[in-house]
Image 1 (cartoon, rainbow, N blue to C red):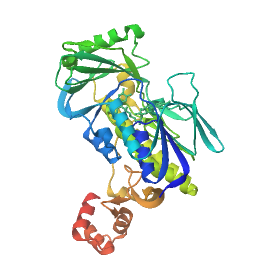
Image 2: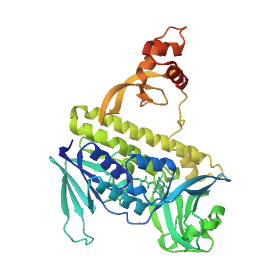
Image 3: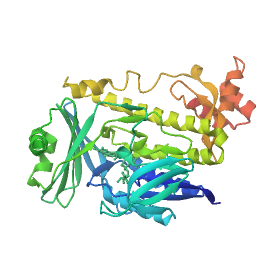
Image 4: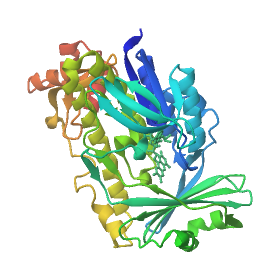
Amino acid sequence: EQHGVAKIVVLGGGPAGGATALGLKKLGYQVTIITQPRPFKAVEGISERVLEGLRNAGFQQALANLPAASPRMASWNGETNSANTERLINRSELDRGIGLDLQAAGVTVIDGRVDRVNSNDDGYAISVKTDADADAAAQLITADFLVEARGRSAPGAGLERLRGSETVSLLQYWQGVPCQPQSAAESFQDGWAWMAAWSDGTRYLQLTFDVASANLPDKSQLIDHCNRILRTLPSAEPFLDRAEPSGIIHARTSTPILCREAVGDNWIRVGDAAMAVDPLSGNGIFQALSSALQAPAVINTLLQQPERAALAKQFYQQRVDHLFYRFARIGRDFYASEERWDNPFWVTRRHWPDSEPLHQETDPASLKIETLPVVSNGLITAQEVVTTNDQPLGIWHLNGLEMAPVVRALQQRAADENPQDCLQQALGLNPQTAAGLTRWL
Ligand code: FAD
């Protein structure tokens, strides 16, 4: 089925814009994506879970040439752990592969810079510069629905946003003798470092600081400042050994940001444009995918069933907020586990975003049945779900079985009735399923 009516334009072709475009295509929409390559070479580490997420989102070419996992060392609070691995990815190559996957799926990909977006009664007029020449005329693209996926560079003026402490990551490349692919993370008094090396001798060195308190020198002195810090870090040694700086230093803002208004009637923000997490989590791409995988059903509902717009928007915003706080609290607890320093970098991050525990204590008595939005057949609908104080968004199914009838049967059973017998009798479940469910609950 082709939904020929709505013209959906996605701004930005990173993992979030790409996954949203693929999802919309599967729902039958015509999708155009406007993107330009990022202006610097970034390297990121991804876990197997992120890789699985990218695969599930439908990316193939993007994953075709990923390097194998390499050892990752972590030095935190004076302790060193080398049990983990990660894949060291070149973001320019990943993004290029995403573009190929989009083209293969029939998405129209425009290579250009989004210059301005104007909204009018008919939707949007997007002016795009496809020529490197700054004076060249812009191309005008119209859209009925806009997906904002330009990552951290998505304009956010006028939107309510929650920001953590202002954070910056300074990155540089070194070139050295060939070595084993590896990465390492290490905390230091004013922040933390992440370093990666490849077999061709390329090294990537990234230091993350607090903008307000790091007393960073001006640009001409930055490299020296970073390199002085790097030389004090024991785990940096293999990365600096027989190697020299091979380029300029580049700054990436890495402040955690939650957009409190991530969806409207004819627009949605996905990925980092909706919520950008602290890179310490190493989960940015995973989080970007999470919102992007939910967005197509939300967009489909806004376009096909506008009477359910409020429900669809509630569904989306709650998930964006929930995930952001979950990762922010994981980050907070990790910062708190570094106990050696009490300067602003560590003190502010140990207490942000709040003092709520990562997981609320929960027990069977806290189970409730509520009617909340869920995704069903590519649309957002209201269904009875089971909530707990730790799972306020609700659980609709477990292994394909609706949970609300299960909890209702258990709550209504006689005081002396065994829960497993109750599920067998009230819902006709086989003994094995009934036993599994009672255990899980
Ligand atoms: P992006 O990947 O940023 O994609 C946005 C796209 O839009 C880009 O291609 C950009 O070029 C394009 N674009 C922007 N503006 C325009 C414009 N005007 N016109 C056209 N196109 C435009 N995540 C991990 O999983 N692991 C890591 O190790 C990791 N390390 C990180 C280190 C740092 C310092 C930072 C800041 C982030 C890190 N992240 C990491 C997070 C990760 O980069 C993001 O979470 C993820 O890329 C977000 O995906 P996205 O699609 O929302 O945005």
